[in-house]
Amino acid sequence: MREISYNDAINEALSEEMSRDDAVFLMGEGVHSPAALVDRFGTERVRTTPISENGFGGTAVGAAVVGLRPVVEFRNAAFLLSGFDQIVSNAAKLRYMSGGQLTIPVVFMLSFSSGLRRGAQHSFNPLSWFANCPGLKIVVPSTAYDAKGLLKTAIRDNNPVIYMRQGMVATTRGEVPRKDYTIPFGSAEIRREGVDVTILATLNSVSMSLAVAEKLAKQGISAEVVDPRSLVPLDKKKILSSVEKTGRLVVVDESYETAGLASALAAIVAEEGFQYLKCPIKRVSTLDVPFPYSPPLEDYMLPTPEKITKAVRETFNTKSR
Image (cartoon, rainbow, N blue to C red; front, top):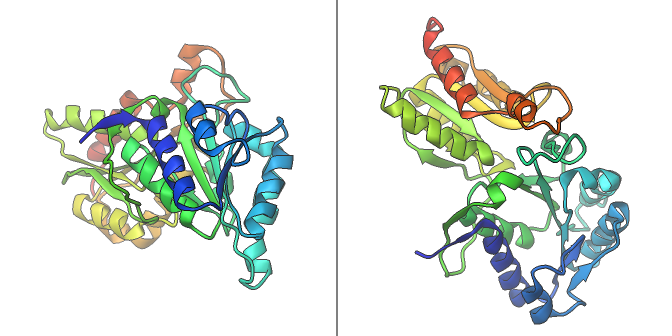
């Protein structure tokens, strides 16, 4: 199978879906790049907008209501906060408020930049805010294969979808088939089989967790790495099945520690899979401080392989109940 970059996989998905359905169009900040999409579909369907997130976010919702399928690019997840009301008050609620008479097929593509030294206003992960808003679907592709398959699914969905990229992941490469394919939402992937501990990880934390699992295997600890791929809907069955097998859980996510996604995922297992647990759940999250410019300080606040390893070892050092 050929290997392409994560971003090329996204562009392929866009090109294929725009060819398949004339209602699909791309708009947002800086979408003139790559030029191939502009050359193929023209500026009517690849629209670069002013830096006005509230404006083009609302335009996208209106376009979706009248039957189009916009894909909206926000250059940074933090910028989306300027259009927050359009997403949580309009996109997420109009289908419910209309009694199902309206559909809102819009994809909001976001990217956050933790680990890339971009400071307090450009680095944090706001996903937990959107996960707390019923009506939105949320996907978190961690590989090039998932980036393409989940985006195609998102474009075809009749509900608003938050499609989250992480800057560190966007630079990776992976195997992607040439054939048309989609990945259903709510379908977690077991990235590595194991029997001693489950590591539940998202986005860049997946590759870190796999590297940790590889090292732990040489030390006699078999870690299973589970990638949820979508957070809303969530594949609780596969997550609970893994915890039932291993009896231990470490949740790794770059949301903030307080009220973050790791907390929500841990709570689900604590409520619905408590009988499987041999010891308390461990979380590895971002510390509750604004992002610094300093590389050593940013590394200190983020999940790292060392922190994941420490959390796994602590689950073994805790007396089984």
